Image 1 (cartoon, one colour):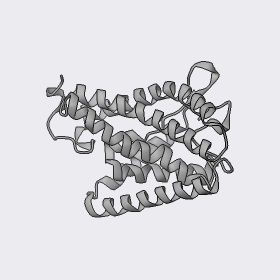
Image 2 (cartoon, rainbow, N blue to C red):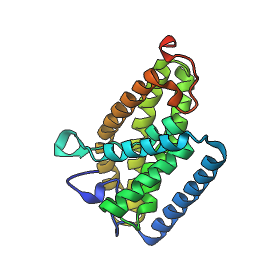
Image 3 (cartoon, one colour):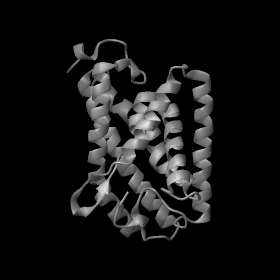
Length: 230
């Protein structure tokens, strides 16, 4: 995600993670993808499948567009929390896994040996961590109000980016790739800002869908959100 230093990116390339870290993160990714496949097949409706495809295409395309931040570098949408809000954490995690597999295999954006880590960091943290934080904040602020939705979306999407940067720095440190203090400072200092862009884009998309097709939001009530503003 950083244009000036590849080893500080969230898309981890080959050779930057130790074998134990690569194996553990691969096992985490495979486990959650397998569980997600099972849940989607058993619980989700058929209409979720085309929505998953549209969501994957949008996130894939959006990740190709970088937005500038201070210091001459740039960031892009991560999309995990966006996918989870629209599809739920299980289907959302499948969408993110597909996006990162395609990016890795076809565009060499991230290494094959680090694919499990990249799915875990940028996919699972956003889809599961971001979604359940979104639910918590929305229930506290106002579950069925536009204010509750918007505050929850912004906080969850921003937090997912910062949490991903934190975990990425930890994995690089455990792999003896970069000292923990150096990696944590570099990753968090930039991703605190990049997270603002993530929150802005995610909120813009979810707000549009909330006002036009609220039934597409996972778990949304079928009532008119325009009548529930707070």
